[in-house]
Length: 111
Image 1 (cartoon, rainbow, N blue to C red):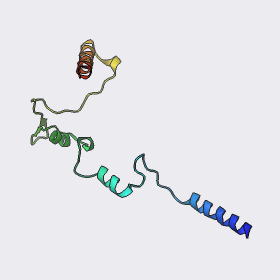
Image 2 (image 1 turned 45 degrees about the vertical axis):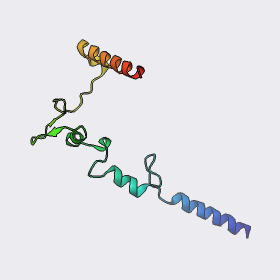
Image 3 (image 1 turned 30 degrees about the vertical axis):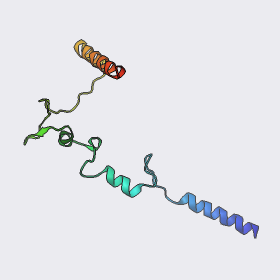
Image 4 (image 1 turned 90 degrees about the vertical axis):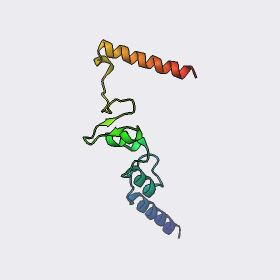
């Protein structure tokens, strides 16, 4: 009788180990159907789900032109961001960067 219980528990442990498991990113456990559908929705429910400039234009209250350009409320054209390493910045870019960081610090610490 004891041998039968041991073999039964070994068989069930092997079956559990052999069962295919789906690898999910953190936070998706138990939400398989609902969360994935919301993350890939064709209509973005927040600015963070936007994948193109036209989607961002609506969240930033810009005006989309027929040619695809977006004019923001302040008159500037919405464009892709330019990423540049600090060491590759010109002196002028570096000074503007430091001025922006200082302005953010003053706003943050004045509150």
